[in-house]
Image 1 (cartoon, rainbow, N blue to C red):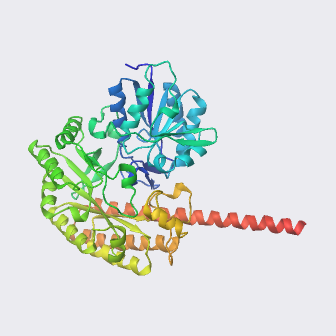
Image 2: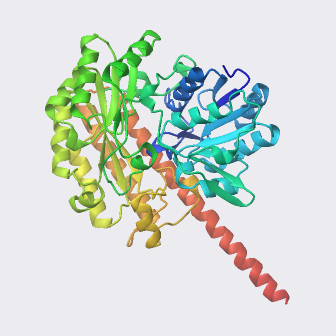
Image 3: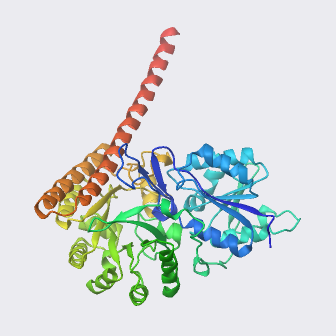
Length: 516
């Protein structure tokens, strides 16, 4: 036993007026803006699986630990700092995200200042790809560089600090980065010994009723808890950070263990679930086994997942729906056939249309994730995407802007061609324009996004009026439109601030020239 080690597993708070989903976008995280007038349950975070898996590691090793989910408890940075001080841990570990990186670093710096003997550890895809940037800017002691949900590195760290009086040397921790003087040292990784499949995540130590909801075609809202059935994505989409944060080689948890987790959570009163697999149907046999196991156990649950359009046949859709699947998030990305062949090989507009038609006939809500501003995008391709979305007619849509995440092929292309308009990571939210290919600018993309949202909103409103569908669908469409509208306002304000700074520089320079 290592009872003298006190571990704080801290989910850092969201910045003001934003919600950070840290394990989305391949572990870089996305940032959702909070509207001034919120729908019921909006503004809640999704549960970050880093928390229950870290608890499982701590439980196995036997150290004293505390989970503080500052997002779910709606704590400010000051409140999270005070609660951390009261626990007085030996080690604090937190998952950091790209759009909240500056706030994350500040709070961890404050913890280190208040608790100088506490080892402050960061993890996340940001730590994997840019450890030098993070360590040079912050007072963080260690960065863990490995795939989500970081169980192997945490196991190594805790075992290294077992009740030995000999001080652990940072250079003896493989797969970690640390700062020595002005230099950043990146210790080489070791072969992985522990995988997420070796652990049953501990959900009972979390405030389960504080997390996010999803809505089905009947308009019913379901509080959902994520389940990690597999991780790893073998596909080579130029824009996608999944292989960076989750690994490229797929690893599957045994289907019975997956359904055991669902069964246990249902006994705790949870009836909604999100499969956090990068694609639920990547392995068709695994997906069928999960669905059949849910059906055989007669579990009355509702769930949703991500999947590729080229991996969901009509047969598997019917089985998924029978097992309780209510919604599928599809990466449609674009309606232009040339762009999709470059960005996402294997997924073509004609296949997408057939898959969406099959899903609709099956009774599954179809959510389309789109990306505006991909390499090669222009006004003509944007118009094609606009027309295609109206034809596709999804129940809901997310209009994301092409975000060149460090480590992706798109980042390399964008850097080489000077397409990136800001390296202020706050704006790498997925809903802010940070990259513009030739012949487009940020305002073009924001205006196009709003035009698409308006058209979809009008189309959906006509359908609702004519068919009498649940009005909650209209509320969701409006909410997506508000996301884009708020991003446009942020961009406009950011541009005005930038322009004002330039004007001040010129005014100061002119005054100095006049006085001389």
